Length: 421
Ligand code: SDX
Image 1 (tube, protein in one colour):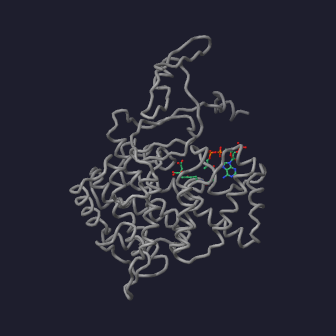
Image 2: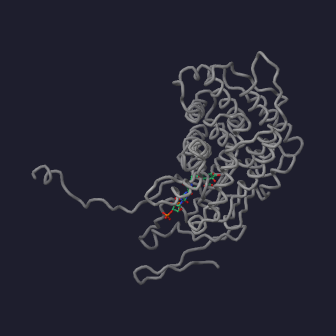
Image 3: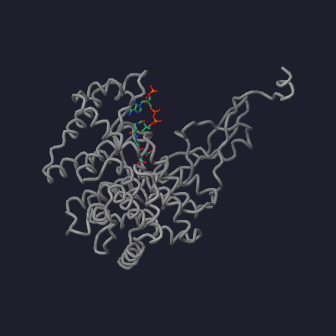
């Protein structure tokens, strides 16, 4: 299969075809306009490949997700840390002992923010969403570090993002900032910096550390999703890494994207507080005249099941059982899933639980407040964003992203004529 034929106005054109390492077929339309005078049209880019990438492979029909070829299930169930998986995503291979030691040192050494940045937190209005703070602080880091030092800034951003997130939470509850502790893992330091207090001993419970490590790895990367495409779009202009990651955080905040995990819990709490009639919400989601959507359901790529949701659903039971928590929201979520998966509307539209449907149940069990759920998603996705920025910068095909359009507005008209009328 080397070419695709296109017939336009009776004229036949041949376009080259590219085939990916997993057999994915793409029609290369880089010469479409010069050959045919026509462009493609694909609102939302559901049928459009933006680039070649070696980082993550998803098969939406088979529910496959692999980071650099490794199945997500194996990575989650391994002894690898989130920092190990981050290294794999960013640099393409598992770190050897020396690389692991060097990267771990750099992550620890860079885990605090410039002391001058701590004052920034005093000036956000109370109640500012932590995603806005994380994005603003990310862009502000360009004022402290050399913007052209991509390799150094990859480590700085990965190491400091969790500290910014924890400080935003501490500021919101009026408690002192806690510095990260070198002996702690990435996940443990998030929980330590959020929940420790200078006036009491605090050891991060291992079960909570393990649950958060799993959540971070599950969110590590997901090919060309909205926020990752934002990194590539913004970065393609030649701007710096801080700006590109700051923009990605803003894209992830959207309720149709990473913001869904907060929406799911708020939806489940609303169902709980209003009599627990989850069928009413399934009916609302099916009603064309009702804008309500079953948050945490559906996916542009997964048309069978999201493997991350399957892992999370099981983890919910394990974490809640271990903590002795009976959370009615989990029961409501399971009932919602069961009703939806047997309903013709969801079956026909191939709507299944996605990564956001169960993640909030675990974040809640870890004691993380709802408005920090999407921040946790951002921390997990950070290595993926960094990996795609780095891959884009090394890709000789990269050029500034500038899509075209089909114009459907007014034809030429003249101010003098209109003013005269
Ligand atoms: C993430 O891309 C990624 O990889 C994202 C992500 C990642 O790791 O980066 O996986 C993370 O963002 C997961 C998605 C989280 N968002 C939500 O849970 C919000 C609820 N889901 C939907 O809004 C929707 O399913 C999307 C946004 C996830 C996908 O949107 P699409 O692919 O544009 O699908 P669509 O909106 O065109 O829907 C197709 C049909 C529509 O009905 P018709 O107009 O054809 O009659 O399905 C319906 C939709 O109304 N539909 C839903 C629905 N999702 C789609 N109906 C009710 N409830 C839903 N959740």
